[in-house]
Image 1 (cartoon, helix red, strand yellow):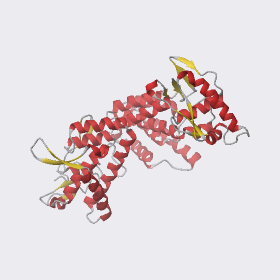
Image 2 (tube, rainbow, N blue to C red; image 1 turned 90 degrees about the vertical axis):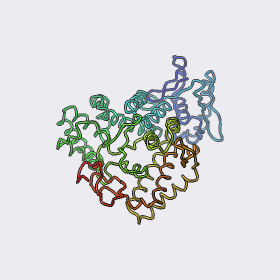
Image 3 (spheres, helix red, strand yellow; image 1 turned 180 degrees about the vertical axis):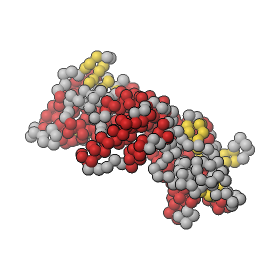
Image 4 (cartoon, rainbow, N blue to C red; image 1 turned 135 degrees about the horizontal axis):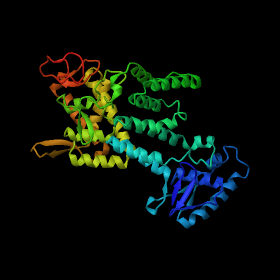
Length: 448
């Protein structure tokens, strides 16, 4: 059976609309169970939702009656509402042909988040957003109950709109951004990420005056409704539109990067993997960040980078990418750990007296050591490699081992940081005479 909740409630079997005889409250109860498939929803919570926390005296008995009717209606389709403690649960098995558009939406969002190719990212977001046919359970619940049930879903939808727009802009598809977002302009005037995407698209379409008007309308709305000013990102974009910043005329491609397996990675300039990891930003000192300067955007990028620097075998990289696609939440957590480690490692290498940063790096290095095995490489040399048991943390652990090796090596004292305000990249300088990046990755300052 196919259940549709993102819009008017609907249930379909073999292309035919079914469950038409359910009452509104029964459809609402079924929808709550579908939003939490397999989880027990207590009777008290169902009562609170069905009657907006103002239930009649016979509410509990009425819920039991509704459940009985649902059981009778779902039984012909192989679905059961189980009693669990003081509540009910509905288990759905996709293998049995049962689907819910809410779950499909979340799955597509997860796949889009780990997609490395912008075109694939846009396709995934398109599929996810196409599932929305209106407000959640448009014909079943009111706005107050919708806020209680769909707060997280609504936020996911807005985030998907923003992320799709960013991917479209990266591909140069500003006309698509305008087509997708303009109909929503009146609906979401306070969503600054969407406003920024529309402003950028308008500017690239040669409609600079309209981009500035959009900013002024947004500023006035935020002041009148929320009593706040636009945030730093939108304010900075406004200044760039005012000054016709040439960086707005093109997609924000990564700076000083190479393309590896559909991922943008920074040039290898430092002479050591641990330093390359820290060089994730072209512009550590720059605020706000230069557009496109941070290439570590997805877990797939991290895995490909580890393979590119020979910290992981290509077969292992492929397995990591596949697992990340299956478990997007786990991949996002591993990526967050890697980003946090990057910040601590950069602080450790640029501030030798920063004992807190060193302790954080050392703790991760100890975890990496416990998860490592000594293997013989094709070059005839032995190499320490994290075991597959490290899971999606494997690139992090491989980097931590490289960092530990550098911190115990005299070369540690030759680490330099490019002092340009637009750089900060790390590199090894065995001569003791260099100061600036050898490849001018900062894009400014003296060359040396």
